[in-house]
Image (cartoon, rainbow, N blue to C red):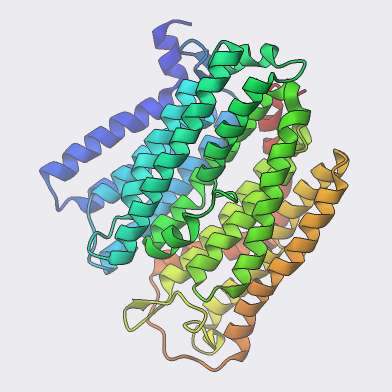
Length: 476
């Protein structure tokens, strides 16, 4: 394919790159045009999502870029949730008097990197996509420079991110040395009958670097501190779009490049999955800060997604995609509630803050209750269906001990969601709550309605789209 054809495949990322540069110039020229930059950034992401959904399929740039159904599925949700982060973050930061045009531009740049991750066809484009989105996330985590917690969060994220990048690059170099190529379609035949020990070592290092990006245990050490210290809209962004991009990338690496060595990499993925679920379930039990609780919840939920992926077949990849989308909706709604709730201008971020919330803000209490039920996997909420899909894929692949262990640990994790409900409904009120912004409440209510009953209607279409996306990978 010639260069113009390759750029037509990468039109979503090319468009976002041009939009980011233009919006950066607008913001630098007129620092008061923050609203215009935010609106333009959100519109650019929506346009990029449309381009990804309707664009041509194929492989470009010498196999480094893949445009297929899996990439299109991921990009639509990545760009969509990025636009929601801009919508909520713009208003939230304005109320904190920490509003600037760099925030939406950084999200656009991060989204562009995530699009590259979803379409990566070799180890070099994989690394470029990861670093492009990671550098933007490091800055976003430390966005409130005058806040000590935010600065600490950004520094920890950057230092540990650099360590994970080193692991990833070392693994990629080992794979290249023993397989003879960085391209996934060339690596696949080299490991068709099972991976050489050198390639396997490289894959383990590569998976360790990728596990950091999805905050899977034992590479989760940055997650609680970053979630607690970063601005809430940034936390919402970090825990949604980047996780989906990284999970799709992991699926593409394992299935496209290492599908022939499934029995070897499955053991590593299952170990990471079970450690993540274990750490997330038990560490979440002692958390008092709601953002740290969400951090451990995200660690556990990534473990569930990896259980589905470890099935190593089309059903497993499809179940992982369904689970991730349903989880992203739930966590967006939960964090939107935290953005909407304030007392005397101070964000309500602890269990004590939401004590007796049902008596002062019954609507928000109902939303948090519905989303907590969904997180713990209570039927018929969306969280139940996500876990149903991944456990079914694991059982069909013969991984019943893992499915049973995951189910037992999900019961343990249910305690801290039930504690949130208990505090809101049965404890005495902690005081009056400030009025909530309309757009933030709207997102929270929409997420709660999606968790039930809308999910019942939408699940069929989501499952069909996920199956189409999974079928695009070279499954064995």
